[in-house]
Length: 273
Image (cartoon, rainbow, N blue to C red):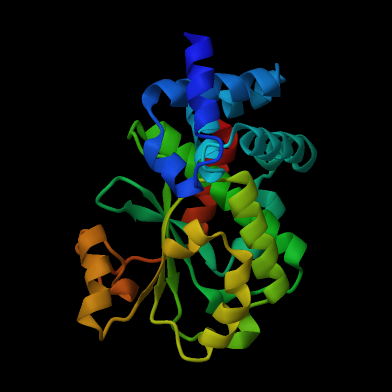
C-alpha cells in the first residue's frame, strides 16, 4: 500500500502547485502527514501539539503539499517556539503595547465561528518593532487558544482593521515585514480573511510597498471594504451578524475596547495556560 501511494506521489512531483492542491486525495494527504511527522521526529511534550495531524496539515497546505518544504517550515517554527517562547509571554510583558486597544480579541465571532482580532492603526503607541511584534504574537496565541477551547471546528482567525483616523505615521514598513514573516512562517493557514475597513488613499502607496512581503495566498485573503460601496460592504454583512458587530464596522454593537476589563480577561487567560 505504502509503495503504491509513493508511486502516486512521485507521479505528481512535477505537477503545478495549484494542480497538486486540487488533486490531493485523503489517501495521499494521510501519507504526506505521516511522512512529515517521520522526518520531524520526536519532540518535547510542549511542542507535540505542533506535530498533530491538524498542525502538519496547515504546514502542508501552506507549502502546496510539498513534504520537504513543509518539513523545513515546521522545523523552523519548532526552533522559533523553543527560542522565542511565545507560550510564555504574559499580559504584564506586553501591557504597555496593549493599553490603547490597537489590537484586541473582540467579544464577537463571525458567522463561521471564527475568532476576530480588531486592529486600529491610529492607536499605535510605540515605536519599537520588537515590542509590537511581541504583542502581535501574544494576541495570536490568545486567539488560537480561544479557538481550541471553543469546541468549534474552526482553525482560522478574522482580522478587522479599522482605518478611521489613519496616518502614515501609524505604520512602519519594517514592522509590516516582520509581521508578515511571523504570521506566514509560524502561523500558517490561520488567517481566514483580513478586512481593511475604509482605508484612505494615503494607504495605497504603503500597501504597494508591503504587498510583496505577502504570499499570493495571503494577498487573496485581504479584502478592501468601503462603507459607502455596496459591493464591498456586502462582505461585512455576509460574514457578521450586524447586531453583534461593532458599530465602527457598520454594526449595532456599541461596546468597544475597555482596558481594565480586557486586562482582567487576559490575566485570566495567562493563568489558564
